[in-house]
Image (cartoon, rainbow, N blue to C red; front, side):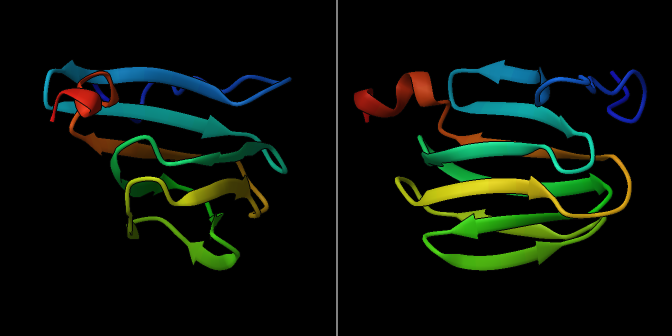
Length: 107
């Protein structure tokens, strides 16, 4: 799979697809059109966000983190977070979760 091809943008809401879904690792690709958001939620695993295209702002428990292409951000388990495309173009990024949230209660 090439994560820069067939990016799952959606006109009405956040687009997403699974890139890797294994016991100890889940990698999701999220795609946000200008102004779209990932609503406030708590990180359900240990997370790393890697920006592939565009600019996003990640709010971690009230602290704004402005990310651009190539930036990597660590998010600790259970941290309140939201993500917004704050750039002037579409944005896509990888959300890397370890372990897979389906396994978090088993650790």
